[in-house]
Image (cartoon, rainbow, N blue to C red; front, side, top):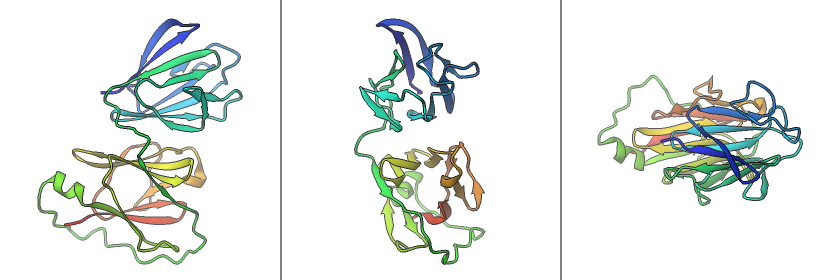
Length: 227
């Protein structure tokens, strides 16, 4: 189930916010899902992205910054008990079902200058996938299709995998009982546009199918299930 935020000021609890939307915004202006009427808070201060049981916090270039457990953040996977500070207000994240952890795998991806791309697999060819979904997911992998890292593979063994530059992850892939789901953590930035089989994903969470081609910054990666 989704988590919630306990909203407080000067240790006085004001209200709770259930994270029941995929994207929620925090800020001073009307129209934010969580409105904080304080001059220390930017008009659109921060954004919360929730995928199944996990939530991710992103600062929206606010004037005074967004802090989690006393440290300034740009993007941060929230864990049960994390305390978000915006201005002089606190939002405590509560969710015992959250799977986000510090040891989530991060793959470093750099922009590829080369435009020479190997031919993509035929996405119209029917694929025979015997066995249970759980067995297939255990053999799921990513393979880089172009650039200097072409041919490199990454096994998707962890429940959550981030793709992007160190400290500025762009994409999150979450393993669920019914498949792997991919979502952009920076959907508003055109330079980090996420595409699946040539189609822009935007802020949606998309289920990956065998031999889907993921494209980030012109780098193409194939998702496939080992049979």
